[in-house]
Length: 463
Image (cartoon, rainbow, N blue to C red; front, side):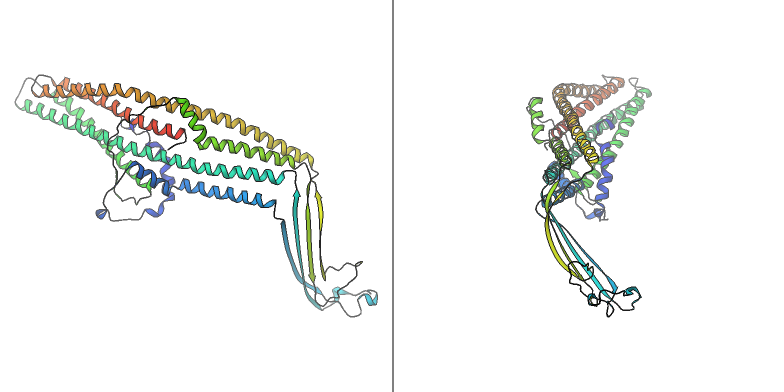
């Protein structure tokens, strides 16, 4: 019996656990395990707590907030002006006596003047686009697609965490089933060892030392597998604590120690493909990405056209001690106070660059459509594969169940016959080996079916 084969989920956790550990460092505080009762959870409890503390979901929520901020910025660009305000300050030389316009501005030697005074200037500029041929509106639409994609990303993260939780739960239940099975084998083998040893002590000709060794080898190998299973159980129990954000010393267990086949009617694969088109978050994300690329392409195309708008400016400057020249034909850069507004037309004339940017964005748009089709093909293959796995395991379970019933009757009859001396030890060991193999396949089918169902639910975007 290959225990590793039936813990296929464990390797995923080797990647997943470090992420959870880093995000949940605060829960690794030491506690007194002697006073803590064991926490027993259902699958629903595990999923609920996993979603509650998942850092992947929190990360998606922060990404959504970024997308919402980008959308708010794009939305405001069309209704709120771009405003710049600047302040300058320093010192300048004061105006000496007999220098002003009344004296026809004689040479002043200003920079030789030892009298200096304060100077301050303030400038306020506002630009409000009125019509941009789609630059702002397309950026706003692209940003809205980013918000929708962010919402679907949270759903995707949620579905992934549910899948992780289901696989951890089913893996632990499967390991418990194997543990019960192995302990049963060990008990049966021990009874056979006792019988053979008793006959050897009585010097019976029915058995030999080789018969005893055959059974002891089987018993030792079974004990080795039990140790592997017990260690894997501890590992998956720790995984549950990490998923739920529990202190690592908290004893935890699951309600179900046995996997059972669920009776259910399977719809055709087209039914699941239809569900996926409406529920699978990755499919919606792909569509939003294509739409965003289209709007960005249109925005680049609009760059080839001008902008119309209103511009306003307010200037204020004050330099106490310097003469305020009130003459429209003379420039006064120090004492000034004016304001004004105007319509404007702005055109970027670097058409060679603008055209290259547009072609680049158009190529990105076409590439996104091709990537979307490739991803949709991959999703369809994933769904069909998961569906086939569910149907195959469900259909093969009936045969596994029949084989298990037969081999269980075989090993029971062989054990009883061996006890009364009718069957030689070699046949008993053969029955044990057959029982081990068939039970292994039986539990394998149950476990693979549960995992296949979980994969199919994830593939269609449900939980």
